[in-house]
Image (cartoon, rainbow, N blue to C red; front, side):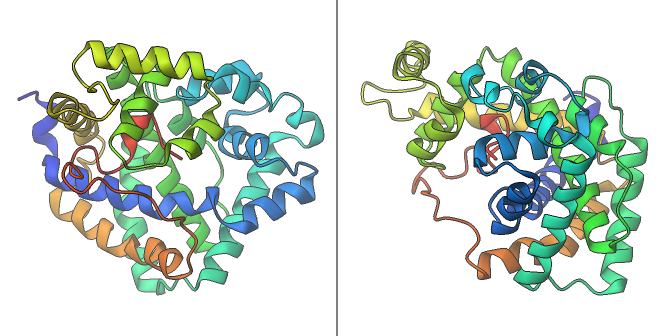
Length: 302
């Protein structure tokens, strides 16, 4: 097993990665994000999402955002052209923090000062000691000054490690020969996200989707009905494990016990939003649900 996989046990890496993703994702679905974007002058959710998530990069051309986001089609990301003229990235970043804080207060996220302090004591060394070589979105988010609100500051540190895993995952996808559309087809074939939602947001056209489906079928990962095969399920899990291996070094400052403890400490964030009905129902495959169950095989599903 590679050295990096021994630094932190893979079950701990998987557990904390799951918790981090769950605690982070509300910002893309909460109504507060749409409201703050509209206040900046962008009512279209597509460009708003792209601006929010890439604001940490600065006023980069849309092509740079496309490269960092991987699984979006060029036509989807091109729609953000001009958002920096509406408002500069620092205003988008500030609006993102405002939206996150408002949403967490509205959903009733309750983390005591002791829990916040313990969570920061675990996650701050991870962020501070991380190797950011090749981790574009993680590095950009690590450079953002933390807000004064302690809960939002914790959420921003969660964002850094969430994007770190996503950046690492893109390397694994490319190494396994899964292009931007291919990884989405594989993800939706696992019945973890509705195809219609993914197609609407990533905007791959019928011809591109069909070509990706054919490539996966040729590899034996999809059957004639475009459903996931056993080989495809195994491939998705292998990709997740390889991503876990990349992330083992990231979580070394926390260790196994710290990673599991952090997962427990931040769980109330996702729990509050689930109770508040923030997340739309997501289909889950009844048999092969374990394969890549944390959503990263789409190159960052949200």
